Length: 206
Image (cartoon, rainbow, N blue to C red; front, side, top):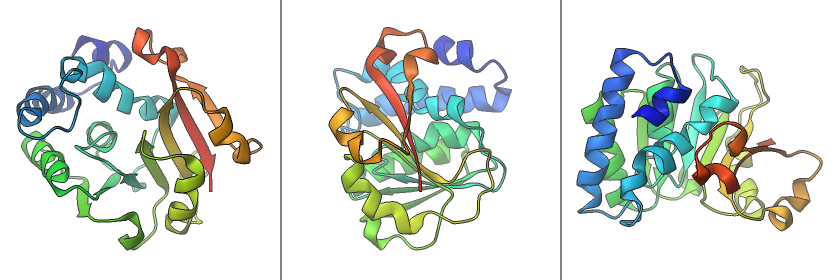
């Protein structure tokens, strides 16, 4: 847990305990349900939990904020973010039920109560949210038409409502249609670990 503590020095004792539960349960679950590449499970803290928490370096969600995690899988980035922002509500959506069961069990055992889960397609989601978050789910031109209707018009945070994605690799072609609107943050400016050299946070107001 030292990498996370290095960047988030104000963690409460409860949050540290919740992180400990994540670090214990995800490897146990991953032996049964492949939510993380089995070659990568040893890098859980940095490559998955800390990576998810990059969003917490980008924006501090105000109490009452509503966030939907599209294609959450086993709960990334939503479960670590829900731990960090207990007064923000996170709605986790995925089409693979067995992965959602992992997220549900981790949240329950860690005492993370500010999450709800929905098994199904994003087209089935009702209601509106302040932000849509995702982690390497699909290209922006495919995602934006699916989520635009879900973004609330009323702004309650320091940045406009919209889409926050964690991505890697060459994004030039993907982001070209949004070149005048999109903000790109290099995660290497947030974190020192080599994993983040090619990782980016993409924010698109909607």
